[in-house]
Image (tube, rainbow, N blue to C red; front, side, top):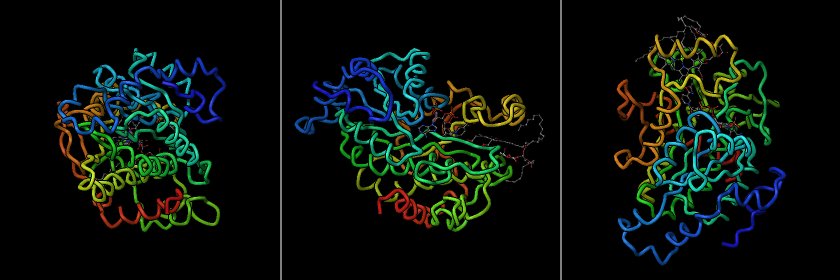
Length: 367
Ligand code: LMG
Ligand code: NDP
Ligand code: PMR
């Protein structure tokens, strides 16, 4: 397979030799993948293909927490090759090794969701790998609970909404074309949501509450220059910006479902995997919070879940044949069985979802 190693990474990424890169990207299995997805095999029955090739799943933010745990769980099945789409190439490589993932089951590719250019480059890089895309998982996120002032992405958008929603929105729109071409029995697009964006729960009522309002801030460009850095047009609040971004994630999943499920057969779903109270998500929180939050969730709310268990839950949503329903928000009860949960009024507002889609596509340069 004469793949140009240099074409697999954006030029701006990291200085390593082509040979190291070739090894890192474990190019070996591509041949088998390509063979199984070539047009001539499209006539073969899909039952046949189930046993013919591994599925390929892209997971954003697989260098820690939930994404890493899910990548590990999937790779252990031997049925999946995971593309770990990460902003820190070396960290992701180390993380994969540290959890014992074996080379032939993953590839790290550079993706910085806080840059639309990087998202586009990632899509090109992925396409050059000639793998088929079977599942896309939008998992990466940032949370700035103590920030007094907003930070901004490469494109000038408030950083948490830029990373958690806009970067993923562009990625998903571009990769939809690739998902459509997949002949895998589990073709899915999964976006990680959260209970804290859903105001029909106790957790969603802890202030500040999510609220996208009429999207005036987003429509204004979310750049804090002359317009607000918050989606609803209000004053910057890092915790609210995160919760708002999760509402966007859940609305986006449903809008994809409405627009594309029937036509493509792809399953679109979101999930709340439980409160994974020790992940990197809370790295910006005050130390006292980081100490008290895990026992609070374990013993008081009982909402706590370990990274490993949460990773298994996400892996289920990615590949379990019984969780193939589209348009669903998955949650788990205390004995770890999955169920279709109810989204809040705002997070299931079809009109808001349509408007969010239209405003977002303008901001990311698709309309
Ligand atoms: C904000 O503060 C910060 O200002 C912001 O910067 C950001 O960090 C944000 O969400 C992140 O939080 C939130 C603040 C407000 O919460 C706290 O900081 C909580 C500390 C108070 C501790 C209370 C004691 C709890 C007893 C446990 C003791 C042991 C462990 C402690 C560990 C604590 C770790 C968190 O919080 C408040 O204002 C407190 C009041 C919140 C109550 C919200 C509940 C609303 C209930 C509404 C009911 C609605 C019904 C819905 C229907 C549901 C139906 C199913
Ligand atoms: P982590 O911080 O452990 O993982 C987040 C991942 O996102 C990291 O790999 C991080 O990369 C990556 N990331 C951040 N910014 C970017 C970027 N600009 N480009 C590419 N990747 C980026 O947090 P969690 O595992 O907890 O979070 C995973 C998902 O789970 C999020 O969507 C979160 O909203 C959701 N969630 C988490 C809950 C929890 O209790 N923890 C509960 C509900 C939902 P890096 O390693 O380089 O920092
Ligand atoms: Mg919450 C009753 C259940 C419950 C659950 C499942 C969560 C999940 N939380 C619950 C309750 C409460 N929390 C209560 C009663 C309080 C007030 C004491 C509380 C506080 C709290 C804070 C300050 N909780 C938080 C924070 C955060 O900074 C986290 C956050 O909002 O991040 C956006 C958080 C979370 N609580 C959760 C979950 C899953 C989170 C974080 C992660 C996320 O939504 O992705």
